Figure 1 (cartoon, rainbow, N blue to C red):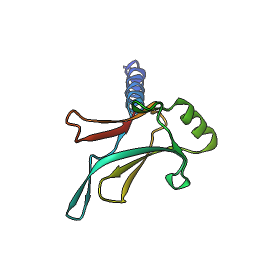
Figure 2: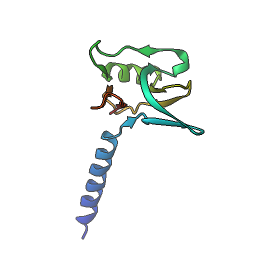
Figure 3: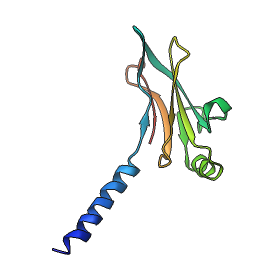
Figure 4: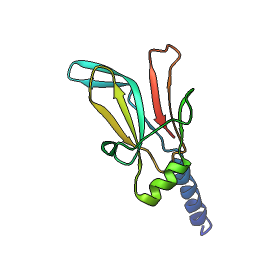
Length: 122
């Protein structure tokens, strides 16, 4: 029965590493404010706290995508994590999300109907 302990430990560690590597964040599609619903309509990525205004540009003009490796490396070195700021129509309220250190890319896009905007990092 002693072989079960190492096998169990290995399985637990393997499962935990899969969970950590799969960590992702997404902007809520709708922000509820009293009786009003506000739809997600914009997103920005920041190096460090958003109030410091270190906004990062997407990789190119055609798609809203950020490749994160260089930013993540710099952030770890300088203690400046990445933040995804989700913005909504007809309100100044935002949802600010810390990007996981394991994330390699953030992206935003319109859905099939062009009425729904999606944004997140993984």
